Image (cartoon, rainbow, N blue to C red):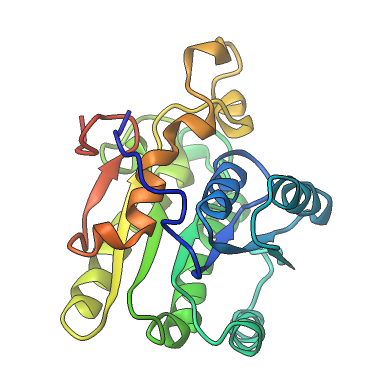
Length: 253
């Protein structure tokens, strides 16, 4: 695992948006950021799960989070603009975004991949992240330093059979992160990076590998050091890089 032990107030006074905050890695990240002082905006499609995350943060003594329900599959540009307007009204600026929400889709040969499934995954895994980043950019630029983290995957670095639209979207996410980083690095304090979480004990992993013993993989909480490091000010020098959460130095294994 990436090794990092920050002070408990690392993110004090910061406002951070987490997508897919209702479960898995997104939920763990939201709790982790709140434990380190951040006010977290919990974005996801299932209100019940967001409320559970909210309760966990409040019970642990973290800053009161905000809940923002949104179904990324049907979200339009106007929906993302409304999100930005709400956050601007409530917070005035944004210090970070973790793009974690994603769909796995079917594991099937590309030659048999359903078009509607393909379009759904492109919308949720790629287009929604693009629209949201574009809409939130003015708020990110209001902060002294801001970090945007995209979620990558091992199958988004080297193509593997039967991973279909999921793999294709993860390749695209890595490329998009690099383009954003190149464009923003010289003209703003916004940095853009991506994380490959690796095999983690989540529902998505269980769906992808139903016969796998989940105990072999770390829980989402265990991979949080890199998520914390990239969201904090000590990573200001990093922009346009793709890191691995389960290597000691964060470099791809």
